[in-house]
Image (cartoon, rainbow, N blue to C red; front, side, top):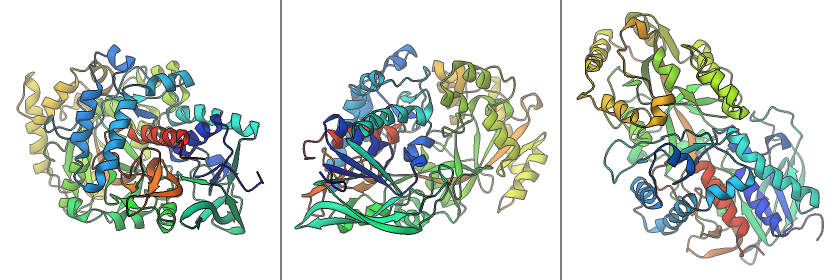
Length: 553
């Protein structure tokens, strides 16, 4: 083969692309992997993740007293997905196949590769309505030791072995703008060589063109990610009928390079996007006081105890509780006519319940050292982890006060609409009055008691119920929460081999997609709701399927 020909071309060097490349290399295929960003960005968005994986019936779960099964996980997935469209046939097959993988081969395969997980399994997206509706019935969020980089390192090692053997070639600053088609079959890609850039990983890089390129292969695999870094595309795809008008103000949970370019390029080549109106944006975003990319936001991963108020200071009704039902909460917030909301909590709550999403915000987990975890999370006295305390001190969305009057004054300096102290106080006092007994009529207090029935939550994730207005539990803290963009749930329509399907439902010869650009599989294997741990899990699964596909020559 010539220098510009290969068995397969992969566009995008994020997790899905790396998994596919590693699998193709194992099969002896020659691969050219292209990415518009510098080599220092290798691994894409997954590098910044917490490293959580949705897995089912694992040793970690069993050690924590969690009884899980493939059947229960599939019930939860389908109750959350709510597939209701004719085009959901392949997404449903992908969902069923992923749950089977997550309950079977996934953990032993990853464990043999070298991945390890924090022993306390997290309970994300708890639902909060009915058993057949949205949410995880049991904890399934497995945090990888080393977080996102700890997931990537094992696939990077495999890819680098193939690079050394001459099977894989990595070409950075190569921006694909066209998929070359001949007689309806993909045969290559072309685009622009971009000028070198020494930006820190995740920062916005230049788009200065210094040349052109063409490379050829009988199989073209697109693994370029979603649209979360492109607010214009997010607003264009926003499901106004379900969620209302898109927020005027948002923060970005992903870097600028998550721009969605390859979606339209793939469509022009014959691929077809389905479920483009399905998306996943968080309601607990705060502006990063030390930003890396434009409009950089960080998601708070909350335990269940913070009181949640809308912009006017009205308490949100269940299931709009911290960590329970993301999209229902998003819809309710936007109904108010404002695009922000508030957490009100105490130092006892922030100490035990606040985690920040991302590898860089969890240096102890990222270090994969027990000594660091113990130092940050157990031996820190009344303080939260160092990154959380830094946000409390420096973050523009945080208010810390020793009285409710002082707290409300700080909130009103940040908010667009004033909060009435008397009204806020009455709601908190009513909640505090429920603390004198081990039983309650308050749904959130019930949820807290239920959470503490799980050993993992009681140990490290859910504060002991206490009165917020008792000074001994202070100081009081308020956090202004923004909508934070993150996941593209719809995407390029594919079969289980990762082959792109056209608008007629037929395979587009030579074209493949995996990862977020394919809605993590099939064009939307989450349906309407994500259960968490399914971003990295979906990239791994769909990348593996494509890399092992016998449809790739």
